[in-house]
Figure 1: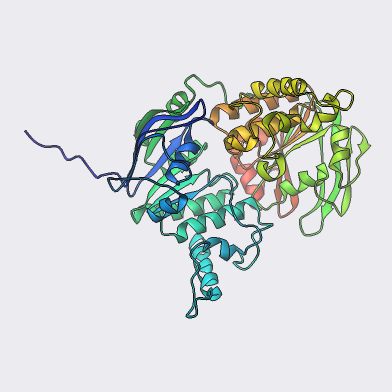
Figure 2: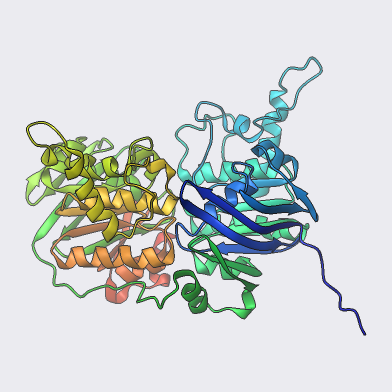
Length: 505
């Protein structure tokens, strides 16, 4: 009898792990291996248990049962420090930097290099940060405070922090969600180099094009359970989606044909020194207008100025013909404008408040009776919108911070949609949202447009822009450089305009 070669042993193995929070089983008997020199995708809808798996590997949670093994030996992580000592580094979906410390200090946090007298060697701290940024091919001043960094730059600092620990296992939880096309490719080049050096990569993403480009193996989860682990070469995207959602998925971009109505939003000559200049556009009822462009082109800053979150130096914003007061979100909301921001944790939610309170915050005055907001009224309103967006949670009274990233995004959407706005501005509406919910959010946007709502969308995902927009406004270096109708919009025309290489005007 010929004995078969069992192949290489896993560098890290998850074996039959279970984790419950109260009566909710977040993870139920999940097993899969991570091999050295391989990128392994972990996919599933929001609430499938991916984040709980990550937190167990990171030492944040201990499994209720089952085992974690490193190099074939069982380990018990009592803290994140134990996981780091075992060579596991995690890049979370949301940045976790200390805002008042410098970028370099964030990178070396907990292991500052010291000089002869035990003092922190600040020159060495800066030199290490500069070396890491050079390796990543980015320019960020190591001495600047982390506060004020864009989400893309915060993510780059998180990546540098993980790489500085020389981890053998790198867990990446939606690391590309706020990165430009070029930053994603630069990150992938670094990941490929780490893979070739023998690191094991666990990659969590809702973007299938990234999974197929980077990964060799895929583990699929659904409702906290393991569905399958297979070589990527054995799966199609359609099959992965079917296993994730447990059903056939309708069209991802269910865009309805709508005849635009009257002009709802008019923006003329909007400018802010050093950020954007001479921005003019309009949006009609029933129309979806998308802002495209590279990260840093000024898209988010423009819509924040339109909503009044940011000041503007010049320009006029009108909603249904009425000029809005500059720098006043309250005036914008009163006129019927809603903004779903890019950074849901910092700008879209009050993390310590309940799910139901977050959903009803913009309408708390309208829902109150005799100056009092009754729990039953609040709960009924929140229940209606969380069900419509298929939000997964334990109880409506739970803090919104306990939800997964994608479900937090749904709560932000629910909060603003409950206002029945005339103009809905959505900045990265499906960032960090699973494929099943993406289709639902797109369907909801299309339905709102069909009902006469004017929609402005900022998105870094070209398929989303091309699939949902009636018109595409391309920004570069703070200016609108192209306006492309739906019939003429393609990846080439949008990207050429964004890169300054010409596009249909």
